[in-house]
Length: 244
Image (cartoon, rainbow, N blue to C red):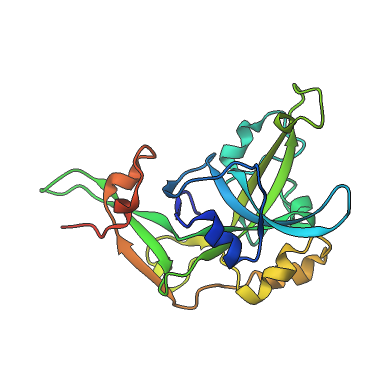
């Protein structure tokens, strides 16, 4: 799974990287080196304008943890931060979004943990590792997004009536990442961005073909401080290599 990641690049940099529009007036997220479930995160997505029908690629904040449109309340999102690539097109919570609402979730890299048993020198603990592309480029994690309508807000045009949420698609971990954890976020190849984001592309088999095994041995794994274990801690120091 992917339960924590880092996303520290400026929105202007991300918008340029993904050829996306940064809508004026929307919330601007600051950098985070400890992104946690239910946090607001950047997503790249394509939507048709309600008035003109023009499809535009946008960079916008969404909440991490997908809330299906039929959910009674948004609390279920905390349990839907990941969707398995093997079944994402079939699960009731994800299958409609898979055909119509796909996105990219930019990241510097992600964290995974390995349990370290107790020893004569100390107690058992979980050692975190930061996993990122070797070239330190942006990871474009494949994701899905969904809209949830808050029934307590009467006006459809009130921004408070709508919650936009997302989930990260995961796959079997490869190479270096696989030594740490059996699952990892599925990062898309840049050549597949256009097809993945196109809201008019509904062919399930073709879309699933884009979700092939990523990375190909181009991941770097670094043990980092256990400070990242607490969501209260943040800052670039969380990526510093752990000292013995």
